[in-house]
Structure formats: structure tokens, C-alpha cells
Image 1 (cartoon, rainbow, N blue to C red):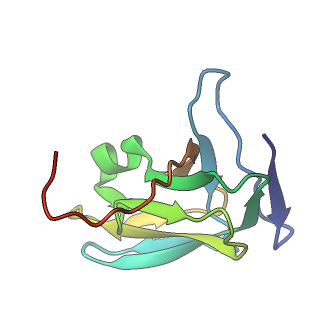
Image 2: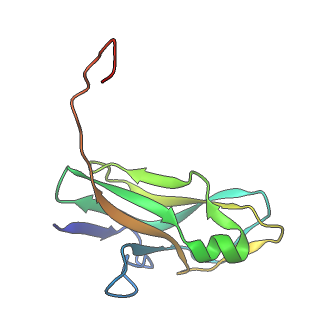
Length: 131
């Protein structure tokens, strides 16, 4: 399988695995200056990239980075981001600050993880009783 990645801005950082055993690819903030997220605020953060898997039987899932959540109270606003295989727009990450102090995202900071996951699409069968 191949995942095509297009930089939408020159400063965008391509997703990469930190170790050979990493399940996900780190997504980085594509910013030109620091972004402060105040406690309780939810902000969209650009990655500056668009993605295209070469198969339709996968979904791209964006997860929070556990270190941001446990150390700073910063997580993803929607829990898990679902990117359909036919979506071609820019990947953005909604971050929410659930902590009690402002958190600063700097250009290039790793803000989320991307995983490619197989999808099973069963036929939907209406019934009046379940097995």
C-alpha cells in the first residue's frame, strides 16, 4: 500500500514514524508563529498536508498524542478524527486545552498521530429480530 502525501505549504512537515515499531505517523503543526491555546479553548491547527491512500478499503484515523494529554491537558476536540479514503483536502487537527494553564503550540510541534486502518463495509440488512 502507498499513501501519497502532498505539501500544501513549503513549511509543512511530512508525517513520519519515530521508530520502526511505531504504529502511527506523527502529524506536525504547520504554523508560521506560536499558537497559544488558552484553558477551555478549542482551536484548529493546520498540518499543511493533504493525503491520498491508493486503496478505498482503508480509513485514516487521527489520534491525540498521549504526552500532550497527560502532561498538559491538551487533546483532540473530537476524540478521533476520521478521514475517508476519498477526502483530498488539508488535514487539520482540532486541539482543546482541558488543562488549567495556557499551552503554546510551536511551528513543527508534533500534535497528533495518523494511523491507516482497514475498513470492513458489510451489507446493511433490515430485520425485525436479531440472532
